[in-house]
Image 1 (tube, rainbow, N blue to C red):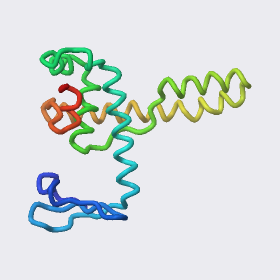
Image 2 (cartoon, rainbow, N blue to C red; image 1 turned 120 degrees about the vertical axis):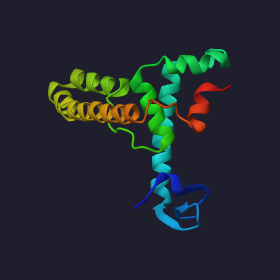
Image 3 (tube, rainbow, N blue to C red; image 1 turned 30 degrees about the vertical axis):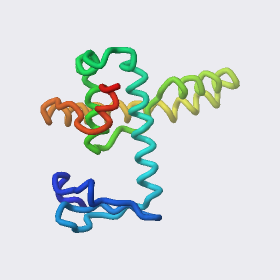
Image 4 (cartoon, rainbow, N blue to C red; image 1 turned 135 degrees about the vertical axis):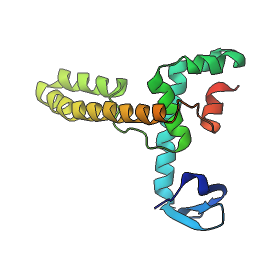
Length: 158
């Protein structure tokens, strides 16, 4: 598929009405993705980034303190931000507060629907945690870098 991330050119890559062409620095077409799929990926990454922003409450801090505060966050949070910024796959299937509320409501409505929902959601949460550990291992292997793209800048600048 893609030989090297280093040869991808953000300036030459472009979207058409139905697809997104990922171009190499020398003008070669590396891969073409359906535009609907690219929008789906972008929307998912945006939701994860928004969740990181809410959790960190960085907007209340002075700009000088934001970067230091970001670096004091748990390793998993920093690894997830790095994963988003470098285009690495992000873990699917987080069992968050919304899913917990749904499980509680289903348990209140009837034991069987709630148990079925939890039987479906529990393995998903375990898979999410395992995928998050893999992201963290890749981040540690890369030397614990800060994210370098606009996603990180959004976290640490006004």
